[in-house]
View 1 (cartoon, one colour):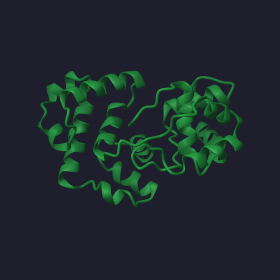
View 2 (tube, one colour; view 1 turned 180 degrees about the vertical axis):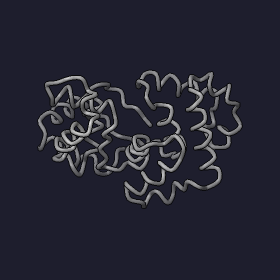
View 3 (tube, one colour; view 1 turned 120 degrees about the vertical axis):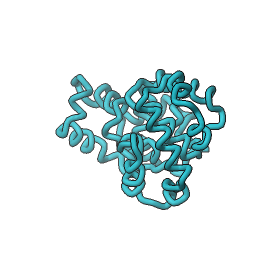
Length: 212
């Protein structure tokens, strides 16, 4: 089920941005959807850190095959060697286990986060080992379905902006302080629907939605 704001956001973005209007027209019957499970969302974001979408999908598929019931308890029981065979680095294995511990002990409360502001959620999640701002922002977008997140560290978003709005490369220039300011200025008209704009810019690179 699409977020309740999706249709309104699409119309607003199409009116204010001709690039997004074209992308939205090309993807008329798909939209953002949440898996609804906070632990799985964060685990999937950790798996996807610093690797391509295709590689992340492959590793995630192997992890699900090795651990069909993806719960904090199930991850905690798995041997590190088993998790590494799924394609996870030693560091990501440590991160997943720490995430499982936080959920298992109640130090992370998914119910409470439903009513917390975006920055408060980011602060709570980045207190967990291995979860940085990018991962917390993916959680806001894909789990809590927050409508106005602009993930400035996301390479896919920056690549799409380079392709559609700027006559320059490489994308790395947008990771610098001045580049971030340019992206924020460019994205200002997208508010309060910057998550939706980001999602469609991702689709311009890969038409198959990723379900973090």
